[in-house]
Length: 123
Image (cartoon, rainbow, N blue to C red; front, top):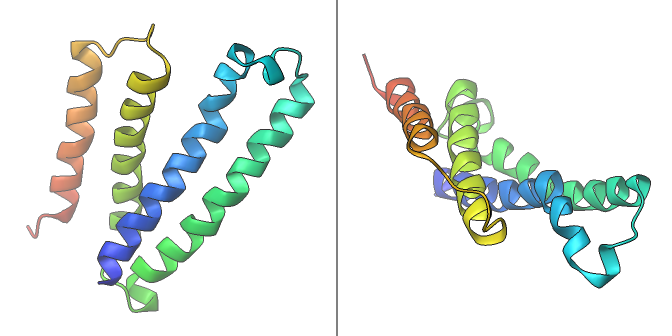
């Protein structure tokens, strides 16, 4: 159950972080965002990052073996990176219609997912 909670919270966390890191690139498409200065955009992104941390910290605490969770530190980071890529791909396809994911992007992301397998495999 802690493993599932960790993955769910990391997914929510990464969704907020993706919007904080890349969502501001679409602000100019909205009437309220056309004239925002850089400082305003940074503050909005920090506000989104706050919500990212509300999920990221509990996710890592619930998932970390040292706190009774099922994952070691390397596994936690690997899960987080894989989730980040999935969220980023979905975000890109939904919000940035002009951006296309090419075959080399998908192969690269696939290799990162393969890294998840390698890290979790009991050798």
